Image (tube, rainbow, N blue to C red):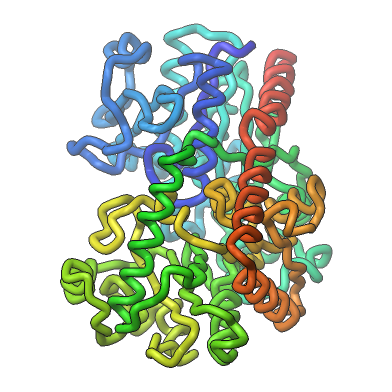
Length: 541
């Protein structure tokens, strides 16, 4: 039993990407295991304004907060995170800590050889935030005088906080999780082959080549200095071992079923989502689309190659040139990927208000964006010639907005809108875990993923690759089989398009069943083992 568990991440009360999904869905199980002994620490990005994801209510942290001795100007907000389980959370206002930057970086160079000399971009801000998080941990540990404490840090962005705790609080057990190595992501993002050439890469050398010395140096130091180093899948464990030179423990991600609507509520949510998706597609294209149109989606961060968005769009381009008879019904493919959004399109909102399939200028996008000429997804769609005209059996629609329920077009949350789809496609090239396909099957939407995604590997290993039984099709991807993967995905989409309603309903039920195998109740044991191992090492010091 531990006395305190701190988990620090840039994505606590800050909805950015997959790590937010990890922490927000894990919170309920952790809170049940260690009631109010779990404290999430994130950045305060709202200043004097309240954070909409934090309830600033009375908590067991209040007594500490009222007497906490922290550097001048540093602020903290305490309360409960508005996610299932309502765990304790602290948001750190770190702007006043920049005055300690040079001193901090010099100390980390002296103690751990962290090279901050080549830093740029988000490096300084990440380090200063994580330093503030470490100061909070130090203050609480000294105040409570707790003896069995685990400090868990997620991603390179919190590495400097871990190193500070390691140097000042040797009695505290440390765990470091990389959800994707900075170098591995950069190798892929620069179009280099990662998998076939993995054994030939040296992380330090690649950091110099890709101008990533500081991030890599910090991440590697945190991985080596942590009592326990973890990652989320076997595919990333291999990457960590090669590029960071330490083999991590695998602690796979899971999903919290509380996010899934149940029974009649699910049916109503799916009906509403489909109605809205079809209304948007009809208003944009000018074609009144039938209720049985095949609704397909991809989502995630805007990483064209890593997330397989390029492969998704190429798939739709191939299908677009098939005959309507061969497809059996129209396909509407959505790209739900946040971009640099300006606002919801006024003409589209007007058309939706009038409930008209009017056909709008530029019918491939739902919101205006600031960088229309350079947006990778928009540019690819135009390059492929998508126009969503009446005679095209496949429509492709780009939704470059966060779906928080107030985007101005759908006005539904991502999870609720997701229930309306018939199929999701996430043909990732670089995907350490893959929350998007797991979220999808949890919402009863069959998914296509790849063997290069941690979730895809887990499905194959634990359940096999019979998509009819699992609701998940795992496509084989390598550094050199793009065309073959494309052909496989095309055939999968056609298979689903030709399914009868009972066949598709059965597939959806099997997808939901698969998601129930990947819950935190089933996966938390690996984290508990990691925490215990870290505590044993700390107590032996």
